[in-house]
Image (cartoon, rainbow, N blue to C red):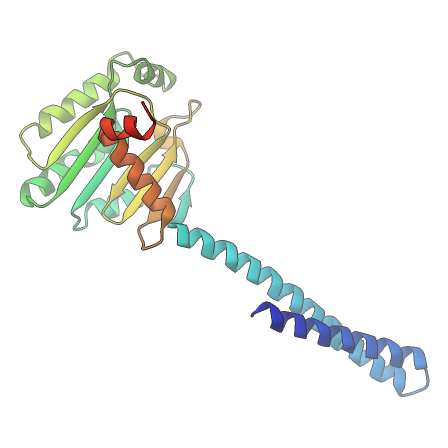
Length: 236
């Protein structure tokens, strides 16, 4: 409801409440009864006005999040949605993480089968170089033995080495947000030092014409994938 209509509705409610108050104050046998009825109607109208305002504000917030591309929020990353999407037909997969051990254990063979069956599929896997201090710190923080991340990454490289449409690159610096993008659906989540990667909150976003949040993470992944672009963006 437009603001002008809310204003008119509010004025009508005020008039009804005022009329009801006047009738009650006039006294007599009939007028107080009429006044009480008007006050009751006015009070109901007031509650309706408050309700419409609250709903309008909630709708406005929801519409803003939807327009940005935000679709859902989960309290961890081990999602059934991953399994559903990975077993559907898709063409593009971008994924960013420290070692992607859990992803590889769950979908390593599925990914290989899909890529070999469809040459049009494009897969970009971006992992932090396990030799960096950042990767070693994350590895220790999650309670893994030294070399766990390096072993996981090497296993992926060996498995996908001869698959032309799967490319793996090493990131030489830290990152702040996990990215898992499959076609027009993207999952992103922060990197908490106090929690293992799969236990941190995850936001699901969906691509749209004006989904600015989705496109922001899309550009960030592209920049991390191409270090030259990232360095130019940061003015290095």
